Image (cartoon, rainbow, N blue to C red; front, side, top):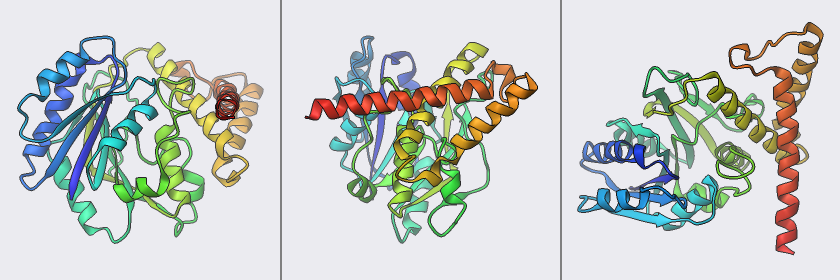
Length: 309
């Protein structure tokens, strides 16, 4: 099985070399791997282009360096998808480092599949002084599909798998199409494109699976309350956009909207932050930003429809 590892980057030349070196080490640690690395520069203004050209020189495996002028992680990922030659597509981020056994573990899982599976793995902090954000450290495998009734209530909100550690067969992409470019970092809705994709997979009858042995280390660099507040705000806006996208088509996926409203009301009655007080983010903040995300998605969708007319 040919493997394509897609890394999208924007103005992170300082972090790219350790990231790419880890991918190279994982490929080298899997002698049987037929792998390529696809790097998408999403219109960086720093030294990213020069660094990529230097790093890719005389690598023992194919490296594609692409440029995507349209801002947004979803647009960059779609650029990588169109160029990738692999039977299995892996996505990771430019501030992550792949464990050396990652590809061995990935091949083992996909060799056992009898049907297409969208899969993600464990994410640990690279720098232990960073805040415990954008990680997933569960040691228990999990699976979401139509045979498990609780799946339809547990997918929204990013709890399943994360975009910096996400893999799927090409057949999944052929069936679902590309990422929704209204969503994702670099757009007015700063996230949610990966959650949207595995929700689409689930709705199409494709299993979504979390496995703890496919390990990525995340060096995200967020250390302050301000950093945490900004990130949670962005994710909450993105969740609101997803509620707007799915509320009328598949309302059972959007039960979180009811709980957000209920928890906000309880918090108002108590007069205290009962959600994330250490990060200065309350249930009421959450509900407000969910509504903001719903409005943003509606406006972006209207703009897109008008542009297509």
